Length: 595
Image 1 (cartoon, rainbow, N blue to C red):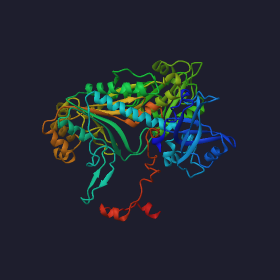
Image 2: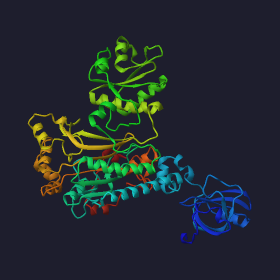
Image 3: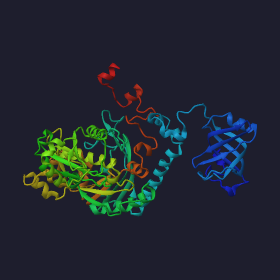
Image 4: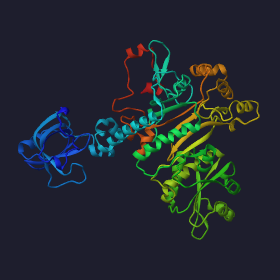
């Protein structure tokens, strides 16, 4: 019984020599020296202690059970003759007098070696996640997560925010990602949805008279996985402030987040507050992305006026964007791999040339550049050894492709990327509207509940044709850390008249707004305060703090890339009775029927 332990496995020191102690934990391994002598490692949540059986009888007790069984060991502490300075308990060992098996491991072989579980296949790790979590290197991420969440809660409470939970079963939202639907047993043919975010509820709290709200909120979105995004569910530190401006929200988050990164981050250099604010369009022009990694010192340059004139087909229409890198002494094979990687990520081709030690244009598309070599060198400020990567096409497409080039080149060139730091910035002034790729018509670019900069007046001008709706900016902001979008927020559109006018520009009238967002629209008609908020992603924040490349490394029980929980065998089939209870009939796609 764990209640009987006198110490944990990371607690005993040289001062405890001579004490009789009781330890409990997992039997990690045994190194057998002879039939009556061995060295056993006992591991618990806190650390490890060496156990040294010195009799044949005691050796047999350890040899009779499999590793990873849980044991109780009672014995006497003594000073070790061969001390281990790498562990806190390395000055002592325990000579056992009694061993009791508390929980037997019945398997002779494990799916992987516990202390090397991170080397195992990911699906195997996820299937045996309870074993994977026994690895101290895996466990420490979860411990850090707990500490960070506690620190966030404390900081938000000290800033006067109340932690309020919002519903998990709610209405389906017509905006954003794909919903997870839950059939309503008592309402045949109708469904609840799991919340993509507490967006509407937190705005309703502001209209209810709560001044500052937050919660560590679970969010559910049926979207594909990637390295920095887990499928299915994730957590965010959701927050909202009444009678607040953009400056108020940004100031609070800077005050809350900087100390967390200072205390728990693997990098000790952190952008001091206030963070730099970069307008969306400036970010796209300079970095080719609204999530710039500012640790990279490279910027994009528009060279359409120079290279758009050369006799090279891909440069004939649209824009040409360049990324200039000094000291990139890559081989042709490495350059080809770079170009191929960018094409895989963007589905766009990229081009290049370089300036050799003689000042000549060589490689890639150099023969097309050669006729205007001097003009190009002057435009880009090129010197010997410069490498020039190029993207072409419609302006937005060329910028995005060049942005990927910039990031990959920065990663490949240590002299252009000061990696070991946290670079924060705010991206502000996002476009309110865009032309939809599929519809070809005006659509909301991001959050439809954001307040347009210029309010009702700018919307009415756009309606009359006096102002281009694509030039309307939303009072919206994203926090970017080392190239990852780490929080998103906005000053909300709390005025029903402005809300209706904003939706009218995308062909939705007042009746549509009332039908799609009845609670929020009605609540705003009863006098809503100006309010603003944001939501830093907890999982992504922990990933940045730990330096992990996959977000699954910081989630206790993550799904795999196919949104499956292979440990719990989820998603799984259900019985016909369960389907009947919720009035559901399953119609499989044809290919599944044939299988």
